[in-house]
Structures are given as structure tokens and as C-alpha cells.
Image (cartoon, rainbow, N blue to C red; front, side):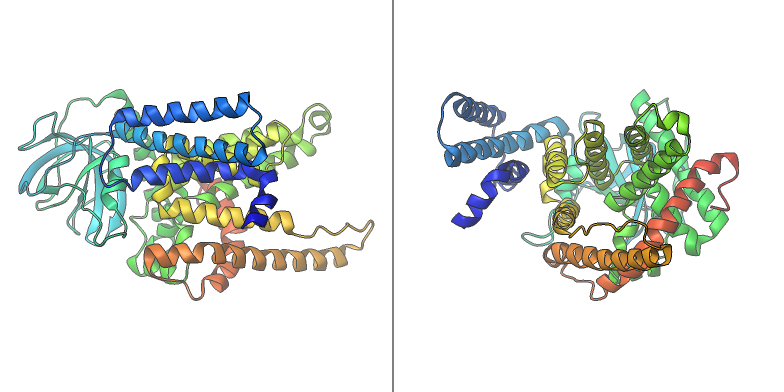
Length: 469
């Protein structure tokens, strides 16, 4: 361990987000909620350590240790301050049947019980305005027609606080719901009725209009392609999983391909990378422009805009937000003449995510995505780069390229699976036995065919030209 610490001392900055995450995890694992003053004391202590390191020459080992301790204290403080900022009313348990009236904010992913809606309650019987949660998630009856976002609905149903973990150390839905602003979950006992309501606040109105456009696009995709393949396409473009047949969902989970329908790093990388390559090719094809601007930086700016647009189109779920920040860090690195794909860029992205969402350290998606990405970037750093031959005949270059691509795909899938396997065992008690083979077969199709075509189709859909892509 001492030898490893000595080796890592030259790259200690890569451990800053690790220390920050440990601090946030320590806060989230406390048995009781500390006072807000504790967060400010932790920040003051972190500032004191940084000041001591900058003022005095303490030697490299002690300097690194104190700096990482400062990051850990900052992570602890960030966790507490984040909790204070999102605190909202939570529905009481055992409230019985309630009349609920509210705005449909979005159509949530269906659960085991059926289709679900995310609502912004206007009023809930038995609860005062101060006691009413700002968001609730309600499971509908199977034969209910899903209303579009922006609709005001009324129903009667059971409403309770988000449930705690089913067993010690298992998934804590209540914690995730708390940080998502969801203060109640329940199920409808009566059919949904559309009613008239007062105009919503402008922020809620904007959110619902974006979600309504996403929902309309998802329905258009399913209408053109049919539910058998359109459900998967709609989920990959808009994040709406309501149209995917249940047997497909189970097949994706069993084969280790469920990540395809969860909009995250893969989707952001494909959309951003596809846009980046297309714009850079376009600039290079225009000699007048290519001589006057940096094609790489122009492509990075457009790629950044594409990632932002896709984040909005997908409904900005937490995995997509994390992926967008990571992609944004890579494009920003290009703009400031730094390596886009490096462990330092990844460390900056992880730190940025945890500053705004310290609770992410407890989420399987965050743990698995950064475990996989870190392993892949480390693989890219260690991957041998042989010298390229000059004037090699193109048939030989094609054969060499296919060989290198196959070896890289095999290595990447193996390394990513090895990195995420322990997390899958811990959180889900399952391992996809054929995950490596399935991803090797599906990754080229989803990366180079499905996602680019779906992206072009989504852009052209408002013009009525999205069918062919």
C-alpha cells in the first residue's frame, strides 16, 4: 500500500473527487440528522486546512493528506446543504383514501403495478397547503388512458410517504425520492378525470410544455414504427419507457442490455460524438472555412449544444444530467486545448456532479457509470498505439482497421463489465451471464446505426420527414 501511495502521489488530484464522495457518503450514512451549523463548521475546517497547506511547507505526503481531508470535509458539508435546499413536505403514512387534483408534470416509467404519472398537486384532501408535497407519483389502473403532460386531472387513491428500504442496506427509494422532490407515492382507485385548473407557475408551465413535446414525439415514433420496435426507439430518444412491452424489458435486463433504454453516458456520447464528427467533417469539406477556424473547436461548441438539446429532450433524468456534465467537461477541455478523454477530465466531471448532487454517491447509476468510464479511460491510456504506415494499400488498411476495432470492442466490453460487475451483484443480486456477448453484438448497431438515425429522425420529425431515418 505504501508503494501504491508513492506511485499515486504524482496523480493525487485524481483522488480529490474520491475524497469528496467519501465525505458525502459519511454524511448520508449518519444515523441522525446533524444541525446546519455542522456543515458550516466542516466548511470552515476545510478552508483552514487549505490555508495551512498554502501557507506552510509541510512536505508532500502531509500536504496531499490535508488537501484530501479538506475535500472530504467539503463533501460532508455539501451533502448537508443539499439536503436543506431540497427539503419539502412529505405525505403522512396511513392517510387512507384521498382526493388528489394536480397537474400532470410527466409520464413516469411504468412500474410493476402499471403506468405511472408524476403530478404537481394543486390540492390533496386532508392536507393543508403547507403539508402538500410539491410532487407525487401515482400508479394508474391498467385500462386508464395516459393523459399528456400539462393536463389537470382529478382522481381518488391511496397516498403515502415514499417507502423505506425493504431490508438493511438495500435500495433506499425514500432517499432518492426526497432528493427528487417526490413527497408521496400511491395508486389510483378511480379512473382519471380531466378537469379545469388555474394557470400553473411559469417554471412548472415551461417544464410541462417540454415534457408534452417529448410525449408527443414518443407517441409519433410509436405510431410510425409500431409498439414492437417503436417503444424501444421512443425510450432511446425521449426517455419515455411507457411503450416498451414488458417481455422486452425483461429480455434487456437478463441480457445485460437494460442500459440501452436508460438515457445516460452511452447516449450522450453517441449524440455528442456523432454531432462532433459530422460538424468537423463539414468544416473540413469547406476549404475557405477550414483555413480560418479551428474545426475541432467549432465541432466541440456544436457538440456541446447537441448534448444540451438532447438533455432537454430526454427529460433530464439524473443519469442523463451526469452524462451531460461529463460530456460537457470533455468538450470544454477541447476548447481550452486540453485532452478531451483523460482521467483528469473525468475527475473534474465527477467533482462537478457531486458538488451539485452529493447524493449521487449512493446511486447505482453513478457508481457503475463512473466505474466503467474510469476503467475505459485507463484502458485507453494503456492501449498501445503503433506507428501508422505511410501509403499502405487500402485493402490492408481495412483489414487492420477491422482487427483493431474488434480488439478494442472486446477489450472495452470486458473491462467495463469487469468494473460494473461487483456493483450489479451488490445492488441487484444478479449478473448478466451473456452481457459481454450481448454488448459486443449490440453496441455497433446501437452506436453507429440506431442512435444516429433516431437523432436525425427526431430533428426531422416536426417537418414530417422523420419516418425514413
